[in-house]
Amino acid sequence: MSKLVVRAGPFEFDARFEERAPETTAAFRAAMPFASKVIHVRWSGEGVWIPLGDLDFGVGYENHTSYPAPGQIILYPGGISETEILLAYGGVHFACKMGQLAGNHFMTLTSGLENLEELGRLTLWEGAQDVLFEEIS
Image (cartoon, rainbow, N blue to C red; front, side):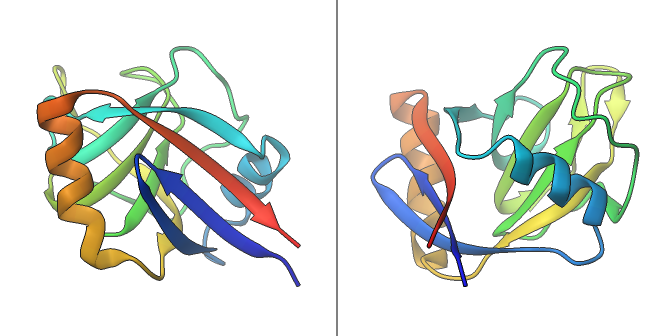
């Protein structure tokens, strides 16, 4: 059985895929290992995000929310705003300059949650942080 790991900045988190988002999970899993950078959100509150422009994962809405809890990761498949992935580290009301959005909750962090606020602070005050999503056998 493989282990899902998210490395963001100097932190490492274990994670799990959400069964209620099977299409998003399959599409993201096909893109793994997935490396990028996280930056601090602009309108959504306490979160970090990965702007993905017009990247198309080929999914619609499933298990979507505008209020991810700390440790929940959502994928916005695009439309009103660009495609993006958001990781909540505190209170989030997911939005863009056009207004409220909803993203697919497809992954949840299961360990290292005590480091979420520090990841948010680090990203806010020191800038973009490397992020890597991978499955390890």
